[in-house]
Length: 201
Image 1 (cartoon, rainbow, N blue to C red):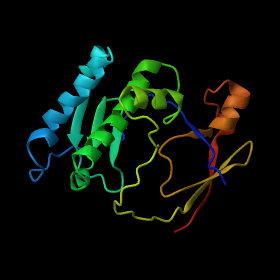
Image 2 (cartoon, rainbow, N blue to C red; image 1 turned 180 degrees about the vertical axis):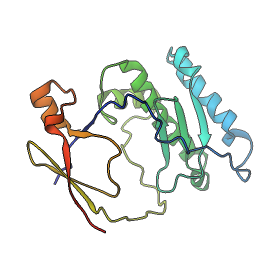
Image 3 (tube, rainbow, N blue to C red; image 1 turned 90 degrees about the horizontal axis):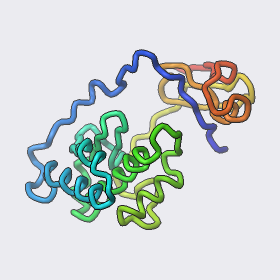
């Protein structure tokens, strides 16, 4: 079963969920081409070559030891790329590929402006191509340790009855994107909100 798409209600307080995610540089990481400054310079060079100097000035690259199964993350609000230090074990090429993969997310978002786009949609694929990653897959296949957690929280759409299982409850109101697109031009509508149905202990 394909998981239903979600639409989050805008949070007026604009609280940063990852406030505690302080990025800590690892002293054990190699110097040179894998140092944060060098990776950031690479990202800036790639963006400037594509004529995106405004974005290049904002992008930061950090090693994030809190990442476990994720190779990298792109943060649109802070224009930051976080990389998993475990990538170093797979070589410089894998670090570069992951950097470009995440940079493509920022580039696609930057080009789209206020227009809503899919995380791995046509805009991201084009950005990947522009950054030298033709045919890039949406998920990595690296043998990073995976932790399976039980999805004990169940939500159901008030309208179409689509269900979503989660490890943790939502922090704010979330609606069914399919219903919002069909009946409210893609904008959040509380009539299509996901209601908490069950929470197993």
